[in-house]
Length: 391
Image (cartoon, rainbow, N blue to C red):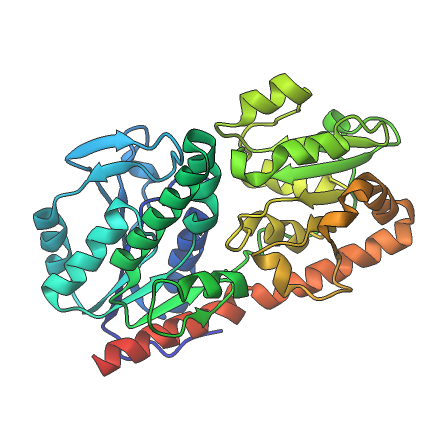
């Protein structure tokens, strides 16, 4: 869907603390960058942390990696390093860009907060997108380190950082109703609900579930259940293993990697593929029987969206994020907490009837199409255009 690009000089300057990494935020802005090129809806420049291991040829046009003057890493969330970025350097970069500029703040980490300061310094309008709910994630780690006071402290820090990043924005997007509720804690305006775009051209069903991935990970006659995403403590992965890993009817596989992987492998013998990309990731979605998600900390949950776009039905725990936007009958069975003991039974029942399973897959794909970039991103651009025009 072409978007009227006027004013044609509109340039989105995105500040994000993660772009190249395998996560939902990186996926979002890579999708947005590709879509803006295709539709000419707006010019787009992405400022993100530099990756020393990334060759220059792999950096897309329009992306400017920035090296921090101090780099400390982040022991809790490695995709968003803790670092100090030169305000003078960032100001110089933004000033050098042509067009009518609008700052877009994607994260509340070091670089995202710097973006808010650049917008204030240069008197540029700013729009934010609340992608990661550290109000939910932070307390998981805070409590494990310091008990209840640690959880309280983590939530206060998250609120402070979010206010510094998004507080002065003219508009703030959020991808789910629960994320909108969190935004209201630190933002005085009304958040704009907008789901994340799903790359439905890339993630699509296959004629059959047979293939190399299935042969490798599914025991004969068992249901192949896949969990896709970062291996992190807050994802409730221990509970997935407790409910499914020892059930002989289920072949459980985790697609991804992350800091919590060794703990799951040691305690449960969890099988991990490591991060998959391109055709291999698509084949994992296409050849599994059911997608499982029990996380309570998703702001959106991009992997669930990719799964249903690929025609993979899902059994998930009722939780924040994309789950709460999917109505009954669209290939996603939502369990209440008191139903979790029957998770394995639900996974088997989802697959037992091939005709019903195929219908679940068809309906899941149907819902995912409503989040195609051409359905979601025009509103994203129109909001930015309106902010730019009113400033």
